[in-house]
Amino acid sequence: MKNITVLVVDDHALIRSALVSVLNDTPDLKVVAEAGNGADAVELAHKHSPAVVVLDVDMPGVDAFHAASHILQLRPSTAIMFLTATDSDRSIEQALKAGARGYIVKSDDPSGIPEGVRAVARGEQYFSPRAAERVRASAGDMRKRKVVGTRGETLSDREIEVLRYVGKGYAKKQIAEMLGISVKTVDKHVTSVMEKLDIHDRVELALYAVREGFISA
Image (cartoon, rainbow, N blue to C red; front, side, top):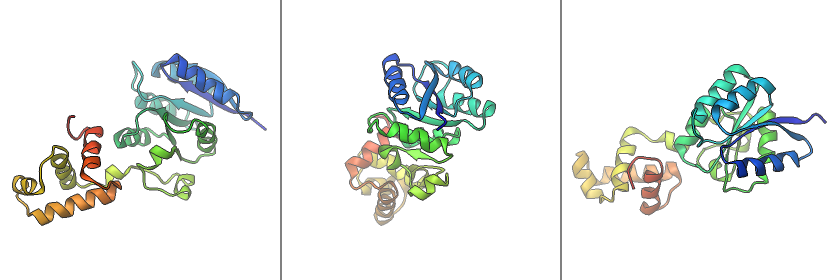
C-alpha cells in the first residue's frame, strides 16, 4: 500500500510533534516535512508535493488561508485540511473559500485526524464533529465535496441585524422599535435564526453572536 504523504504545519512545536507522531504511527500515512508558519508551509509544499497539508489557522506571519490558497495554486492536487482550536462559522467559511477539503477542531477526538487525512486524500471533504455541527451536510455531501458554507451563511441581512440586538440583550419590543417593525416580525426573525443555526435559547444565541464577531463581549 502506498503511503499518503503529509506536511504538518503548526507554530506550536509540542502540538506539531504530537501530530507528527500520531500520523507516522499510522501505517498508511507518512509525514514528509513539518513547518511552523505559513511561508515555510508554501515553500515545503512546493518542494515535497505532499498529498495532504494539515494546517493550523492561527499562526504568525503569512495568513493561513492565504498560505492554503498559494499552496493550491502551486500544487492543485494537494488536499488542504485545517486543524485548529477555532470552530467559528467564519473560520470554516474562510477555509472552504481558500479551497480546503477538511476542517478538524483540536478539542475533538484526535483519533479522527488519520481518518480525515485519508478522506481528503481520496478527494472527499471531512469535518470533525464540532465543525460538522456548523455545516449542513450529509456524509454523502462530504464524499461528493458539496459543502460550500456554514449555517451562519444562510442568515439574511435582517436576521443578522436582529441577531446583533438579541446578542446585546435587547428585548423583542425594543428591537421592534429600533428597526421599525412589529414585535411579531422580530419574533419570526428570531425563530428563523434559531432554526437555521440549530440554537435553542437566547443565551446560546447571544454567545454565538459574540463568538462570530457580530458583537463585542
